[in-house]
Image (cartoon, rainbow, N blue to C red; front, side, top):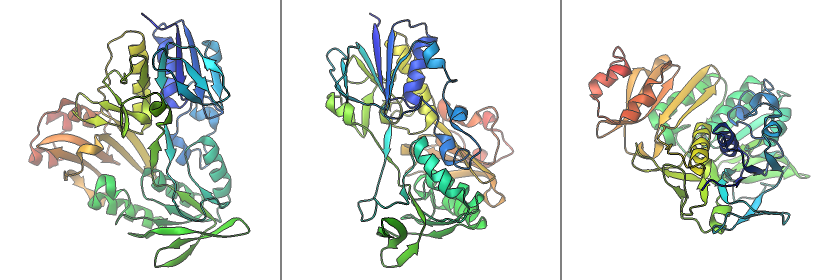
Length: 408
């Protein structure tokens, strides 16, 4: 039986993709899209790059053209949140007490940025970056080009904002627990390459340090206390230490959870009426044979489409290899694969890291599980396809950049 009313809790890219997926597949029933953000669904990758530098506006990052939701008769409640779901019938309750009598629910509640349990997080000048409103505040501050910027954390968001701030003329210091940026994902060797790129652009790094708090005067940030190393002066701090999936609604509904909402390859949760997509979904991936929870927008878009198909009784499965793109200065990084499988693997490097253009592929028992292109083109998507096949490859042939990935 096809649902007569679908409630989508969360209006980020996952919720937006589910909304679009329902209409594109011919669904003519009611759809209610609810999201904390006051804006329609938009894509977040540009928030730390083009939008932050003033090169793009809201219209440029919207998931669908302005007016699409109205044209397709989507009921929207932006600037609101679903607080309760009855898993027996799919009925939802909003924070203002409104009841939505749906009979199918797609959860797309996304993530919340992690903060530090230290003094001074409330100071004017201490920021996190998740929404377009967060990015707009940072954009206005960074645009002056005279800010002393300190970034706490050295993951993808932190490194992209570091690059944007330097391109705008601000000074940047990165404080990180790891020995090198992105080393928790890419390993020490590739992380050192990322560090060199940023140092060539004037970024200062302090490795393997801990932040004890933020200092201020009259409610305004003045610096960052580093354990055992004094205070780093700062006009602006970005805390970029990752995000936590927003599982409050899933927990209230009594769904099975382990790191994320446990879903099958059709994005269905432990409740027959509830699907979960995007950052919160821990999907049993048929290629990796492990639970995969990805916080990148390509995962949200595909998961939303699969959930829409499943709600309508279709048979699509989420079996895509997660991918994403990062841009830092003129360096383009394209990643594909399953980070949980990379932990004990060493990458096979194709090309010369020192040249700034290379590909690295991580193998487990000879099978490619992840890879990254750094300024190395892959126009035909050969790397995700290699991982998708799941077959062992000869490491010596893999290391030979003269042999195309398609030939392995």
